[in-house]
Image 1 (cartoon, helix red, strand yellow):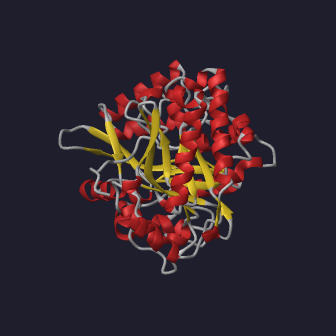
Image 2 (cartoon, helix red, strand yellow):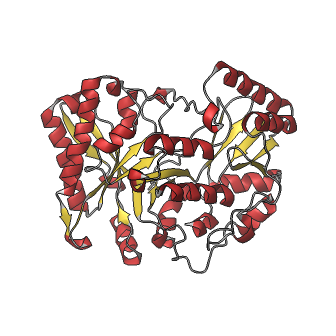
Length: 439
């Protein structure tokens, strides 16, 4: 836990690599597409934002939200029994956020979101470890970001045990029943791993053995984005081998029962990125893949965030985009099918975009500092269902800040409920305390 501080882990693999395109759902969902006209409008948005925040907001809303939300609109009946009171609302001030963000319900053990909740914890953000203990009963799965499976010459090594905090795990289990599934990222050379039977067997043996020796409940595996970055998934033969590897690993984990948890088997949660368009490409993880891995994978951590970036500033995870992704994966019928296995990604970080170029992630502490310093007007963007504000820095550069609010989180919890899905939070050390009243 003594690693240098990072804002957050970019979880898309070696290739910043992927040049992620967003889903072309604009015609059907009101979500920005990837057309030339969209790029022109984006340029107009940035230019006007630099010149005038007021004009910029207008341009953004004309493109993405023709109907503005009336001030004071609140979520249906509030937080469903959770905390936050009147702040689960579109009309919120920076003063209210500063005054209320650390206040939480006296009953911190009560769950208001009944579906599974997977929470990520990072070694470089110690607050996450404390949050996991403090709100233990709110989480069903805890995934500390500890391990990497790497190539070492002609063999493999599983790095990360030095990150493992056995005392923390022991404290967690005294307080609640959340399963501990450390994240394992497959950094090993994919062609070697997938084509060589001995390497595959070694990888599975290393993972299963670590779970048994350390008393874990399973793992969260991240590999799909890495394989996509290497072009592995564009080769039909290697793509089939990749799915087969996940299947074999899942069955190997399921073959191990845990006496500590009443004979339950080790679990496998698999990290997937959102499909990029209605027309799936080979490197997209789609509905057929969900079906093929059904018996081997216990859950899918779906990364429905990072919709925008420094080169296309905007909301972190537009609600219509999340709905589009879930519908693409699960279909439109009344039967939600495998929805119960999906953890819809929920960002507890935000972004501070310098509209002349650049920007980066902000944590809850960063956000509060910006509110104190700039005393901004918080605005609700209806189409994306997110709060944001604008400010001018000491160099006279315009910034746009998008960070979660009680209202934006509440609506995403409602979206997950609609599909019978859980949520996965990246990551709990970056949020504000009153967020957990909604869970």
